[in-house]
Image (cartoon, rainbow, N blue to C red; front, side, top):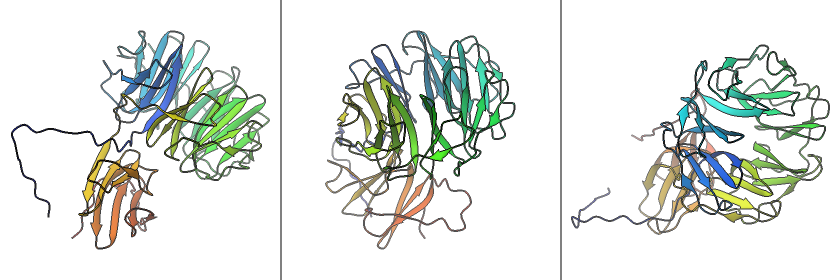
Length: 394
């Protein structure tokens, strides 16, 4: 039993220096400024190469950011549930631009010339030719309207889906055709185009590569040790892949071979990658890191980044556990310092214990640990709805 006592009328709070479980969902760059979209914390801007960050959410009622894009001097933010927002003053103020957008759960934004494309979770692809003022649905031929990512090389546009692989359009989105031959995993997390190749990151099956505009695909995983690839980024001719718990991998051969580049990272769960000039940014479960030497070493830059969302807390009398949007953290000194537990890849909403077991309710169902959180196993047999927000033991 926990007993709380009020000792004085002047209560004070002290930062516990973590846990830094902020879910960085996307990056964008404009001039010398970098922008980071977060899950639940809104948008942050850095003007010093990612060392310090400032929240820029005025006019942005929804802090769940699914995508960011820059077109000239305009900045666009796609939110999860409230559509697209537009800023003409470097993110200082935001205005909704949703006319014609019949699905407002935005998962991807893409600028192609003067056109702006928005991918949605369940509504397909939308196109705006007037900087978001009006939108039209452009999903003809897409058989799965859950869009996860968008990419272009100018004449071709590619859309990744959550369950039906890749679709390609050669007429500015007016019509689409499936482009999946050779891809075993149909859940596409990210797409990039480099040289004559299209590169696709999948959930569970690593990286695929196509040399014929998506007509056929082959695995391109040599050197990658984790097959859950969240994001891809291209810096010049250098290709980067962010993985679930293997950190970041680098390829200088268009994906033919990869090598790990994790020096300086404090988390191997990397969900987002961004480029500004020659600086590479990584969004991890412990915040934002940047590299100025092509990923061979990383420096933390989280000052001012307040999106370190803690959704659940639990104490077993010795250890303190914190569930966050970026996994579970544990403290052995009453919250003075924190370390990531073995459950560092999902959003943890609930924590309970029973005897020697600790249970975590997450976006991927229930997980159980018998070694104080060092390792976990899924316990989802017979469960059909896997987002667990609450747990009780009786």
